Image 1 (cartoon, one colour):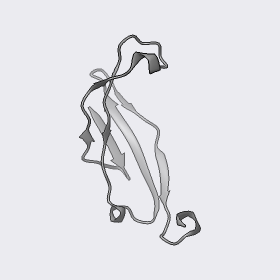
Image 2 (tube, helix red, strand yellow):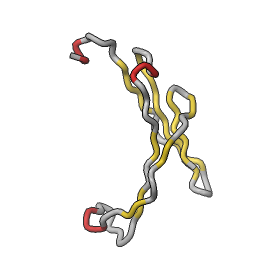
Image 3 (tube, one colour):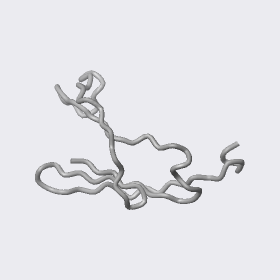
Image 4 (cartoon, one colour):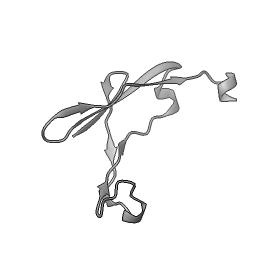
Length: 83
C-alpha cells in the first residue's frame, strides 16, 4: 500500500503497470527487478501560491514506513522565478 500526502491530505493516486527493469541498467546488481509508479496529475489552479508539503507512506506487509517530508513552493505568476 502506498499513500502520498500533499499538505497532510492523502491524494487519490493513479498507478502504472508493473514493468521489468533492464538488468543491464540496474545499479543494485539485481538479476531480475520490477517497478511500479504512483502519482496524481494536478491542474495549475489546484495549488495555491506559497509553501506546500509532500510525504510518502508505504506498508510492505510488515511495517509502515514514512519518507521524508518534502517542502516545495509555488511562486506567483509573473514573479522572477516564473519568467
